[in-house]
Amino acid sequence: MMKNVRTRLLALTATAGLAVSLGSVTASAAPTPAAAPAAPTKATTTTSTEDAKLDKVATPRLGWFSCYGGAECATVKLPLDYDNPKGAKTNVAVLRQKATGKRIGTLFVNPGGPGGSSTEMAYAADQWLSPEVREKFDVVGVDPRGIGFSDQVQCLPVERQDEVMKDLRVAFPVGTTEQRRFITATKKVTRACSKNSLATSMSTAEVARDMEMVRRALGSDKLSYIGFSYGSHLGTTYANMFPKNFRSLVIDGVLSPTAWSGTRSTQSSPLEERLKSGRGASKALDKILRECGKVGPSRCGYAEGGDPRAKFAALTAELKKKPVEVTDPFEGGTFTLTYADVIGTLLGTLYDPEAPSIVDFALTDIESMIEASEAPQSRTATSQRTTLHREVVAELKKDRTAPRRGFVYDNSLDAFLSVTCTDSRETTRIADFPAYATKSDAAAPHFGPAWLWGSAGCAGDAFTGQDEDAYVGPYNRVTPKGVLVVGNYWDPATNYDGAVRTRSILGRSRLISSDSWGHTAYGVSACVTQRVDSYLLRGISPRIDATCPAETEMFPDWGAQAAPESVPQLLERTSLPKGKGKGFPAPTVVR
Image: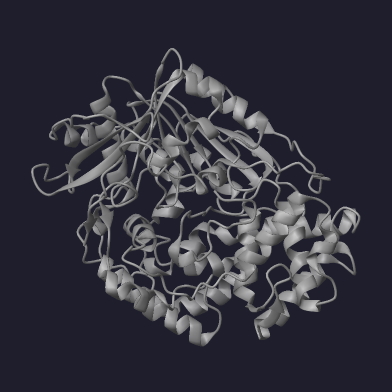
């Protein structure tokens, strides 16, 4: 995802990793592990509709070439509309890392987003996959259409992007003026995307079809897959569209598919109200502040001077009234500290496997800067902490209003909206989002509005272009092979309840529950990692659900030891290398 305190969600309007989920549990204690749900009722068996549709499309030839100093790359032309296989095409990028030993299959990967690059994830496979899995699998990334090294979606003319985006470069809008400007700018982007043929053909179903075409092109192997965050919805969708075509399928950091797509009874609600993403973040922060108060200032610095929960309530109340000017203790100079910047930064820290300690660092730094009574360096016992403090301050002072320079078009918002809004069914009005934000703040203090505004572009009267071939269920098809679902209790993005609900819907799935911090659990919890690896290598679903206990203290004495990184964190700072052999050609920008 990122270095320790860099958020994947610096500005929810330019998302690099959507994190959503359904439901919440009591904040003051770990959720009670879910009992194994009963078999899904009224489960439907698959039909051959999707396979038959793709049978009409010529299987592409993968013209592999050596790229990036050891990987293999290819691009394939696939139908923009699978109902018209001879019509317009879009280029999709594919990258493969060969198995390091005796191969048993091909593992497809997706990092989430929507907007993350699967080719970059596959390239970085050695950094996040266990050696045993790398030995046995070719690892393949298929960049979703419109994203990464595939043909890139572009909704606005490059010369207009800064003009439109200036009012969107906030963590989230606070107050009537910011909200009005945010809504106006959002409509400009969404209405442009609604008229873009690629943007309205980027639903998760189309990505699943593209992935299936690449699977066919690779040969007779059934698909193995691991997807994180939004990549969980791609996995769930593939399992329901092509239930007979996979060998093993892992989803970690899981979205409730029915909440993500919406139903007739819920489409009048905004995405955040259906998914309740903010409740997961609020629950996690409240747990941290409660435990901080219990262990005291010797283990959690923010406990010094009073109850952490009361201190945080006072801090946010003051910042909501008026931003403050503070001094950067490392670089000098002053910057404006706003309520939205603090909440956006804290949301980023909650993504980290060491979230309790880093939340402590962040809030202590904020308190020190506001009071101007103690420089953050005075609490910096090790070089590791010095780095963390510097990153906290850099995140807080980031200028999100500065325009970009040069010819590069940032299509992250276009990509996020094109996928999310073609998947999600909404009849909401964007003018009602200030009222929704008030309601969301009551249900999920601070983080509810942050998540809500991130998907405001999907209001029914904002993004009006729809993909008629989007998949919106059913999600309870009985699959010949089991799906492995992973959820951790304190995930601030994909709430644990999203995993529980998906487990209860999807036929023959199993759930691993993890008492861990941060976003996703593979690579963080040794217990989760071992179970996922075993499932991938054996291709046999566990007989029963499992629970993985906490493996680290909430407020450890780090010393000079670096905190672990989750898979999303590693991927946030990993990109395809420059100047190391032949790579993908520059992707075509499609308007």
